[in-house]
Figure 1 (cartoon, helix red, strand yellow):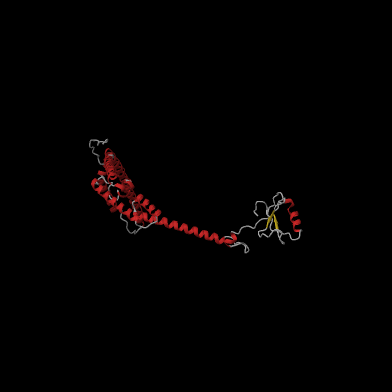
Figure 2 (tube, rainbow, N blue to C red):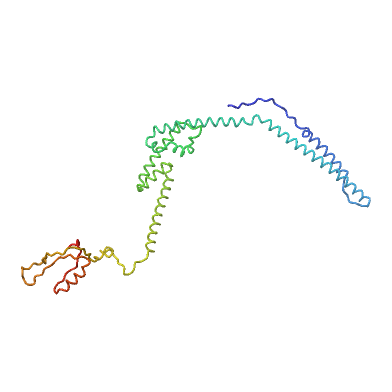
Length: 322
């Protein structure tokens, strides 16, 4: 230790005279008070002279009482001052020893801390070398934080072998708990979340409660979303009564637009109708395919319709197919 006990010469502190003579002073005052009490005796007044004498006696008695009271205050004040001075001297007397106890306590605590830290490092190295898969999954700091104070591993008096035996027992519990988690029938994502939470805290019961709470929160959120979609669908505006409904109406192809007319040269080659007749036979019908500029289309159609017996199907633009 850097601090050493100081050697001091013993010093006798004289008790103040006022304290040592307190009994003597008190005896003197008692005698004075007793004498005054015998001298000044109140009595029933029987005459005017007796009245005047009683008034003088009262004045003298009050003076005697005041003298004793003043002496009492002075003596008590002196005693209090002496006590305060004595206390101050006692404090100064103990000053050389005031840091001794704290110095010893600090040195002892530091040594215990160093021993516990060294032993803990030794157990941590043993844990990493001997505890296999559990040591790979759970850092020793997690095991220490969870169990050291509960099982008193952090005390100076703890035994190294006893701590290692305790740690081996904890490792066995971890292995069993991991097996329990695997057999609980959770969905893969929930089982993995529970496993991770357990490896973080080494508290199976608490981990199960936390994961169950997360699952319930997730279900509540899904239910709220489903209710929201249903509410939005119910609040959506209704389609008009004559609006098309059903999958067929929804997929109905739009009506064919007016055929586009494309300019082209008139074709002079006749095409026979699908049903052939003998050459020159009565009633033979010839079908012609023609092309007409768009600006002359109406004129052409009107001219053709003016010929008796001439008719035709829809007019198609070039590229629409025959």
